[in-house]
Image: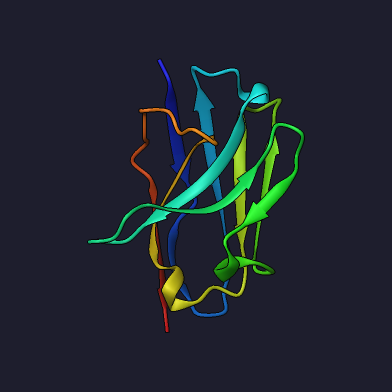
Length: 115
């Protein structure tokens, strides 16, 4: 069964940093592009960053230069290093495959940035 377990969120002051992790199971991890998504109440889930199976990366404009996505195929884990955090980064963060997310979403990890 496909499963994603996100961790690493928390409460941080504006300008601070967090590193999110997502452990995946039930998929052939190394064969999949992976992405981080985020969602705030009342809004649609937003793609934040992606990494292809060949380690090419791309970011939504609002996080370029501040967030870095990476992956460890040996650990079936994708990471999101978030620096210079802003209040508008507050959201629940999820990982899933890219370009087509699976139907299985984890519980996510809450990131709250205080201004």
